[in-house]
Each structure stands twice: as structure tokens, then as C-alpha cells.
Image (cartoon, rainbow, N blue to C red; front, side, top):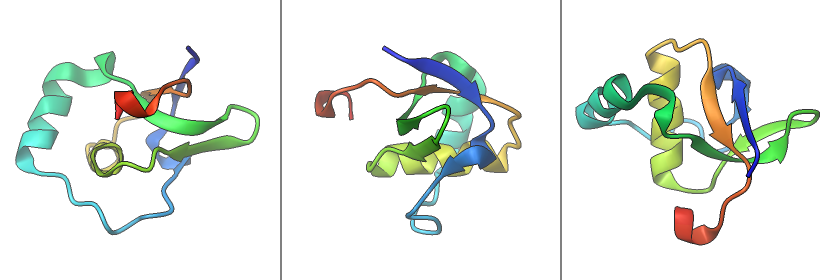
Length: 82
């Protein structure tokens, strides 16, 4: 398990513009905050890319729109975690 706090704007999103979070997503983030990590690939030295999963991309968009300064990212996960 590898977790880090990074700024949402520093996470690469190759599918930008294809994900639109729901109001429910925004509310969940406001309640859960940084308890639930965003699944990403990469490492701190080279940067992170959001996982290839619509839910992860929606969360990233919502975090950016909420203007959060940092978010917890998880770099070690299995496909079952998606």
C-alpha cells in the first residue's frame, strides 16, 4: 500500500471532460473527505494518473471543482478495488 497527499490539479486525467460528477458525488466527498483515497497509477517522482475507472475520474473532477488543496491517493490496488 502506498498512499500520498497531493493536489488534485497535479493528477493527470487523460480522459478530461468525459466525466461529470453527480450532486450525490459532491455530497459524498463533502462527508467522507479524505477518508477514501483516489486510486491512481504512478509515483511521487514522476507524477500520478487517475485510475482508468469512471468513478475515479468523477471523483477527481469533483475534488477539483470543490477546490480541495490536497487529496489522498492510493497507488497500490487491484482491479477488484475498482
